[in-house]
Image (cartoon, rainbow, N blue to C red; front, side, top):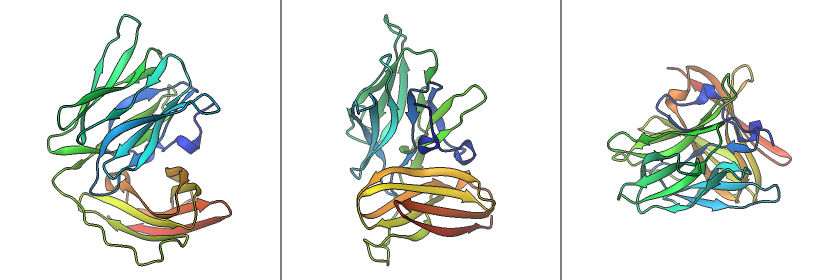
Length: 260
């Protein structure tokens, strides 16, 4: 299966602060973006599958209890493992290759707990170590590429652990299909609030003024009710943008003007 736009966030929207932790150019692997809701961090990883197509999926879990796929593979030379952290993720470590040629990516939480989350021995896949800046915690994964060599990159992004964000409740009815509001957090993120009338596939896209898709922030099944997704301010240049949320048979669009 090729890496389609369903799992791809274009490099134009990659935050300047994000640090690559995984690269792949194999058609049988996919990466996807995930941003924890404000005031939360990523504190663990879960595994699901294999599915009907043979894919095993690694899901990032936020401290809010929300889990979203960020990587999947159907190659036997690559494996993913769950890690239940006791605190926010603060470091990614790399070890290997071992005697069987595997290189391992390990997540470390704020309490010092650690667990291997991915192993690979394919030459077309690479993992990289990353220690988050002091006082920061992991709160998002972004995607860049493919580059000139065909690599798609999964990058970790951070938020200041000392500046929690208080959310005000949306004023629109919870179960109406709508983009309810957009707001900026003190940490420089655009938070998009939207509501869904029923469970099902959802796609949230970000376009520039000429209709070029800059990012796919959500693509997959979600439950009915309120949802939020965030995008870093550093990923955007001044201009006019459009946010579009689509469900089967319906879509909603909101305009965003960014002055500076």
